[in-house]
Image (cartoon, rainbow, N blue to C red; front, side, top):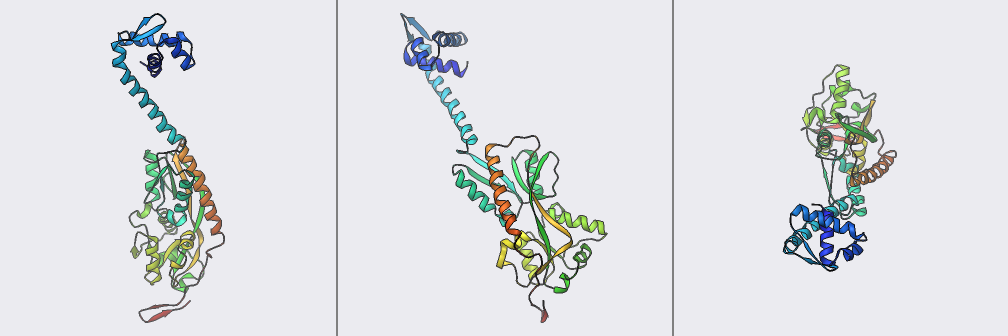
Length: 325
């Protein structure tokens, strides 16, 4: 039993003859009558009595009719549901993003997507790039935006842009000269993304530098959020690292007591799209890539102007002792 046979059966039922049904379907009369005959053979019952040039439905036809209508309606609903996704007229589009994507304009990305496709609901998840990469690899997500490095086995990786990571401190002496990993390891250090530890891309880069230099990085304070690390560093409890993009987005919320300087061996957050290797992105995912790429490229262009790669800290009063820039 096929959808075509059910469609021809209902047309014959509605129009009262195979020839009239064929005209309505823009088909030849033999095509319609042959498919209805095959349907009768499969069901083992006659659906019509031929009376002259017309058709009289049998009891079997009356019993089949509501099921045929329901089946065709269900098939049409299924086709329309897929069309809504294909044509971005509905459905839910779920993507992953690195944990601090909100500092890099993820709200602008979502707002732009929604403005173009208001019928599509959006879901953006992710606590860390390693988690996003794993969700894409497993098929839980179709597409993700991550900070590199991540385990790229089974993944297609397409870099978008990179953002320099700076060393921040309230102590001007700690910011003079070359900022090396040896100096970072020797001072009190505050790091964020505590739950992910060495899986965090920045910590991985710092750890690799420390390993090559033969030193150990042991933060005096571990926290989850970058803004908390900045606040603690601004109180003089230790030094931290922070990307220029986060500093630009936070603006005046960055403690004025903090200054920063670039690493002698530059460190960068490199952001990229990841998808399953060999997979074909859905229309929603392809549109998300276009929107995100444009928004993040514009963000990277703003980073070329500000903030400065180096800033002197202002005076900080700590337990009666003043540190001056």
